Image (tube, rainbow, N blue to C red):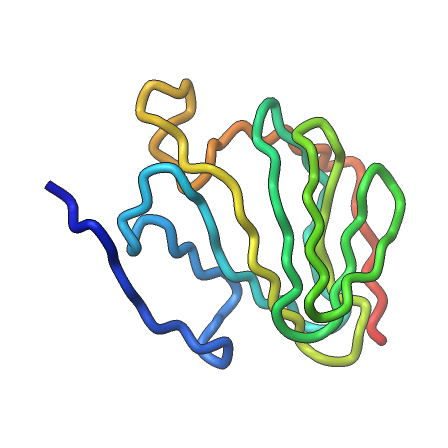
Amino acid sequence: MAPRYSKIFMPLTNVKDKEFLSRPMGCKAVGFSYVRIKPGQGATYVHRHQVQEEVFITVKGDGTIILDGKRIKMAEGTIVRVAANVWRAIGNDSKKDVVFMILGAVAPKSFPLGGRTLLGDGIPNRNKVPRWKKG
């Protein structure tokens, strides 16, 4: 039987590019990770999902999210929920690193692409390349 709770310590200064935390925490239904993005960098394409909604939280710095082609600033503390069918990409148009927390769902083993960190139902559009600005 899995433990009833788990605890880890992940100071934001330790966050590298991506820190997938669901599996180390023993989560069965919650997917979440930290993502650090350097100035002028970000996702190299947009994507959407079949059924997965996501929540993006700016926990450090000032980030940017692109939703269906609209560029939206995400100051520290901003929380954005994105429906599955919305094209999205996160990046950093500022002069300092930004750290996002991304929340989703862990797939049940019966899900067609199960076993990944999140539902794994992403639909990439590699022809839509976001242009990130460096502050």
